[in-house]
Length: 301
Ligand code: ATP
Ligand code: MN
Ligand code: MN
Image (cartoon, rainbow, N blue to C red):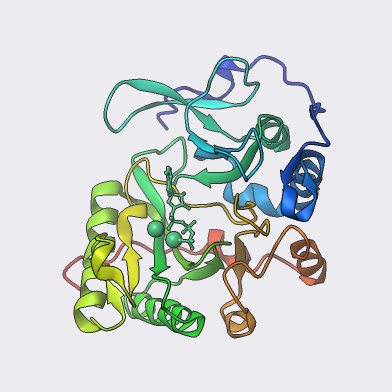
């Protein structure tokens, strides 16, 4: 494979144990959740988090002054960060060192740099031009009841199944749901984007009272925006088990489809309760995802 900025090249010896500075600083003041609590959360959830994160170019949302203050997305490596990188061509511009997680130390280093949210590409760093995860990002406007969002996710699942694509659902920790279909073999980004767009437009065309496939905020009232724009080179989606930098410290949480009916909201799972959920699970609800072999359907379908 063309490893671009190949693995070990720019990696000095990393410290195994990451020092967390300002551990008592409040990250979620309304909950009394400190930076150390965030670090403890990521330590505990690590084995669940890593499979969706390792080896993918990454953007992180950093909140140096907690979630009540300004946060910012960062995708490129910056000086002083003892974190793995991959050197990639930007969509527009030159080559850049993108952040990437190779192991738990990278996660904890990013947490030390006040990363709260982890947003990987739908592509592996060693194959950045091919999509291996289609994401149908369902974005309901404020008026849409939660039951309708869940119904929409099931409809997306069923339509994908008709195209021979098995899919998985997660809460985002925000307002909507993500329906994710693995692609193995992966597909060129142009094809993935065209497919996702055609899928979204056909859904909105068939059910204009429920869905909209254009990003215009004005016309979205009462509708669910099927945000197919996640499916492009350089686009990201929140990682399963990532915290969200929103009040309540919600966690993006993968579900079994059978569980969806019982889930009360997209932000139902939080730093406070998701570990109890995981303790009761035998394996990850998305366990099967990596074993599935399915290709991008022909656009004509
Ligand atoms: P919700 O369910 O509330 O929509 P979400 O995580 O799906 O939560 P979106 O606003 O729909 O939030 O964004 C979808 C994805 O797009 C995010 O998970 C993130 O990876 C990416 N994204 C959104 N805004 C930005 C941004 N400003 N910079 C970089 N990536 C972004
Ligand atoms: Mn969304
Ligand atoms: Mn969106």
